[in-house]
Image 1 (cartoon, one colour):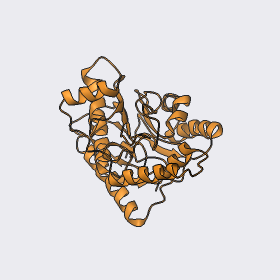
Image 2 (image 1 turned 180 degrees about the vertical axis):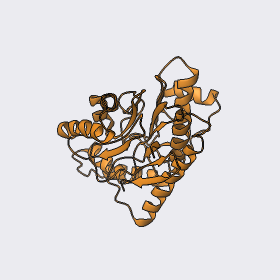
Image 3 (image 1 turned 90 degrees about the vertical axis):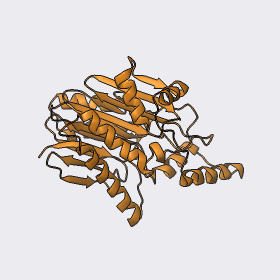
Length: 304
């Protein structure tokens, strides 16, 4: 059976207890099943939008409700989708509960690819999207603890690295790839960005060819340190490999090796799906919870 929908919950340390493991697995399964519900009647774009929305609403991953905060204590989110040679994305959005829904509005209802900042938030309001409720208590606790360390003058050689490592223990970017009954592929990503990032920072998730990419050959999405993924045009290159009939696992491996050689380990992970329904997920971190559902409805969870 070919895979028709695959998702991930982010590459990182994922040093979790048994309860968190069960929670992560449950949400991944729910996202796959919900996306599968529209397989017979909907598109691959429908499938990934629904699956990512479930992940955004879970509060477990660094996307939507679970988004992390920047150095000012504010949430800002990025998301992007690609389908039928069109892309829609939002960057530095603060208003919507589900930035993936706003990215879809950009894709389907505008002539543009990326809408950013206040303009993205204004568009979300005009379109009647639900507002974000604000940072979760656990996110605020991390932020306050980190700020207290800085106020005490504790020596921190690399705040970006330490804060990133702290956040990757909990969750990271989410993403999805799918192929529908008409053999059309789609890819999408959503993230709250890097913990303790500079306000205004935009990562790879809203950038076609970096955080996500799809064409007639295949689809791929990324997770990890956005700056490194941006510099390597990672998902575009993975899909180009798929167009050369490279197996998804080999395609990811080739690009992941480039990232690891240039920037080190603990930096990235990817999932990819080709036009034949072959799927793979690889990462250079401790774990990357991911999974897929086949056209017969069978679910497989891996990576954690």
